[in-house]
Length: 116
Length: 112
Image 1 (cartoon, each protein chain N blue to C red):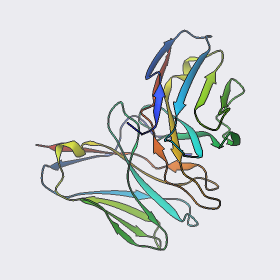
Image 2 (image 1 turned 180 degrees about the vertical axis):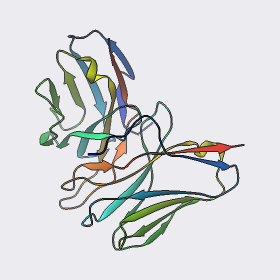
Image 3 (image 1 turned 45 degrees about the vertical axis):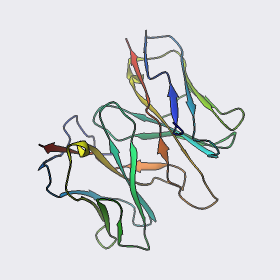
């Protein structure tokens, strides 16, 4: 499968714990995105990378959230001191982008986080 | 923004009939629109996209229509199949070119 992959698919954690999710984009896609989706809602943008540079962050990305893409390939999203309100599906997407255009973003299967 | 509860607009359609899903977008400057299909427990799956210089685009069994005058987008699915049962989202650029803003989902339920 050459699509976007995410790991783990499910994560249950206790409030206050830290969690880290991984996303592997489609090979050679230079852009990578993180979104969050709660039940009954559409995905909400969190952050965006072009290669290894994090170029945009949403106000939804509080200081407990950090994302990295150290080598411009896979990315990690870490949530520190998790809260029950962090429970959601965390989606990763990737695209092959060119300057000034909006690209087609292809999504992974998501990581479902449950904070107890 | 407007809050959306757990209840999604639902379209029930008989297998073999055509489905039409509508979406109103907010930004008259948007130049690109995408339809995604999301099955339960899965990530959104790209279906079809359209640029603002077009008013119609066809794919396999799907057609997207764009009416810029009234900021309206629709997705038509021909000969709906049970595998088409899912939530469908329209999306547009949400500020810059690098984020998508998703509309309210529409649930399609195909009755065999």
